[in-house]
Amino acid sequence: MTSNRLAVLLTCYNRKPKTLACLGALFNQILAPEVNLAVFLVDDGSTDGTTEAVRQAYPAVNILQGDGNLFWTGGMRFAFSEAIAQDYDYYLWLNDDTLLYPEAISNLLATSHHLIEEGNLSSIVVGSTQDPETGILTYGGLRQHRWWHPLRLGKVIPKETPQPCDTMEGNSVLIPRKVVQVVGNLDLALSHYGADLDYGLRARSQGCTIWVAPGYVGTCSPNPSISRYVNSDDSLSEQWQKMNQPKGLALSDVTLSPIGQWKILTQRHGGPFWLFYWLLPYRRLIKIFLFDLVKIKSKK
Image 1 (cartoon, rainbow, N blue to C red):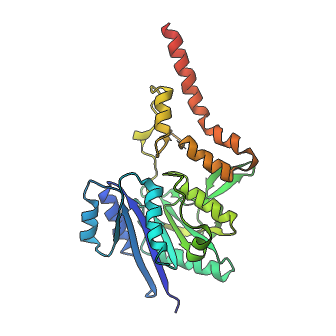
Image 2 (cartoon, rainbow, N blue to C red):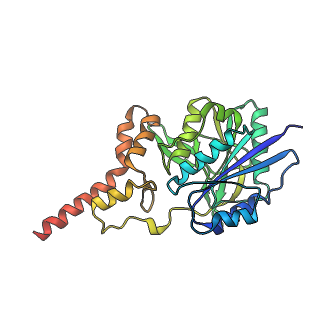
Image 3 (cartoon, rainbow, N blue to C red):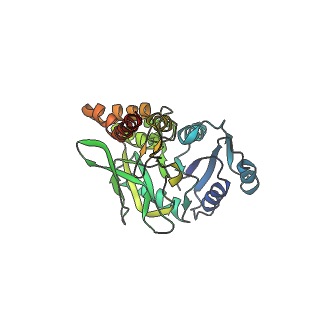
C-alpha cells in the first residue's frame, strides 16, 4: 500500500472565523487510511486571537508566526519551505477562505494517481471552487485563450474527467514531490497576486503538466471586496500609491498589480511582446491623469 504523506499549507491574517471554518472542513475530510495529513499554518501577525483559537481547537496544526508583512506569497512560501524540509509526498495549497467538501482531498489524490498511471509523472492538480450562493465557478485552473497574449487567461470549467490547463489560481492546488523538486518554492518577488500564476507557468515551462480535477472541491466566495474598488475622485498620485501596495488596486473587473511585479510576470511569460503586455493594463490610469488635467485647467 502506497503511503500518501500530505502537507497542507495555509496563511492567514485577522479572519479567525474563516480560518477556523476552513480548518474544520479540512479535518472533516474522508480519507483512506494510508493518507496522512500535516497542516502548516502561517499566522501573519493576526491581532484577533487566531493563533490562540487554532491552538485550542486544532492542536495538531503547526503554527508559524509572521510579522504582518508576508501577505499571501510570503506566508505560503514560509509554510511551503517548512514542509519541503520534511519531504512530503504531496503539498496542498489551501486558502483559508476555502471550505473543502468532505471528499475533496480524496478527489485530488485520485486524480493525481490517475494521471501518473497515464504517464503524467509530474502533474499539478487544481481543485475548482464555486460560489456558495450561486454555485458559479470562482477559482481554479486557467487556460491561455489567445495565442498572441500569453497572459490573457480564462477559467477552465471542471468536467467529469481531468482537464488540462496552463496555470492556476492558488486556492486549492495539489503539488506532488516531483514537481517541487523541479520548480521549487513560490517567488517572493511577487508579494500577493501573481505568484500562483507564475508557479504554474514556470512548472509548464519546465516540463510539468497542470490539470483541473473533476467536479468542484469546495466553496470560496469571489474577491475583491467592493470596498477596495477604485474611487474616481482620487488623484492619479493617490491611485498610483494604492496600486503599488502589495495587494494592488482593485477595479470593477481586474486588479492592477504593482507595476514592478507585473513587469516580472510579463518579462518571464509574455514572450517577445512582453513590454506591450506590461504597460497595457495601466492604460486605465491614463484616463485618471487626463481627468486631473481637465480639472486643473477648469479651475484656472
